[in-house]
Image: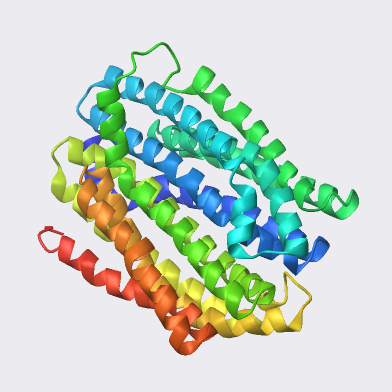
Length: 436
């Protein structure tokens, strides 16, 4: 990357780095939606509910992986911006080793946690069975997915976001085809859908490892000296991402806890269907964030703080426009979309009614998230962590337990927009001294 080129072509560079990341993240989201489609149509609403009940497990892996990889990648980017190429590669090797060990360790612990989760959530019958079948296989799949995501961050930092896009397209196609074969043809149910994710993730890992073996210009695997100081610094720098993902996992557990007691599997299935739209938009935000972060880190490391802030401001505008566009589209097709996943009128109507309320959060959440990415990319973990903690845990949990008690399922749908609106005020407070 060249500093002058970034300064003179900010919009071009943001889109050049972000669009492949956005497409990659949306394809990742599409895999989740496709899993939900096959789960709902070939397993049933209980299958969709079971997958949603276990999402806190997924967020645990994502949080741990992002904490290590985004924190490490930001530090590596600042090394490169300061001309320390050797230090950047050392951070790459250490970050990937730490990511692999940590994600595998989580799986070893989670083996003993599946059954207790079912008991706490009071999931019974088919929901309990599908939950344990699906996540029993996903404990193998999730470490591979986390490692792939971490490798992808460094592929973009290496200046080749297009390669990761190609790998993501391959992963998506393989996953959808194998979902259809496993669930639609072989009747392997929930376990078969999870197995499809595992096999496609392994193929993707092979492609990414090949990139760093043969194609990478900056980062290469090799011997390195592990530094606890750098490890702790990287995790502290990426702590906001861990806080964000773990907060989301805790919030999802709270959502499921409340909904299961209010409406049972029907409500959880409806919330999951609406959640797919939110997940899609979140992937757009993360794509913009991951695309802009290397540029911000590079500029900040080169002492071009004004340019880094300009990139943040422009990226915020893009995510606001994307949120408004998605809101309009989904509001127009909500009835059709509500019945796409499960042939059940109650679930369809519940999802359609809640979607518009829930999606008003899209006008705020992108700005909050991108600003958090910005603070992480510039090494300001406190500000980033406070934004993530507010929108993902403290304010959200209060809304989840208070609003449904007052307004029933309408309160469930209101929790996200109220949370993001309040967090926007906190975000504005942290940005008050920024010259952008």
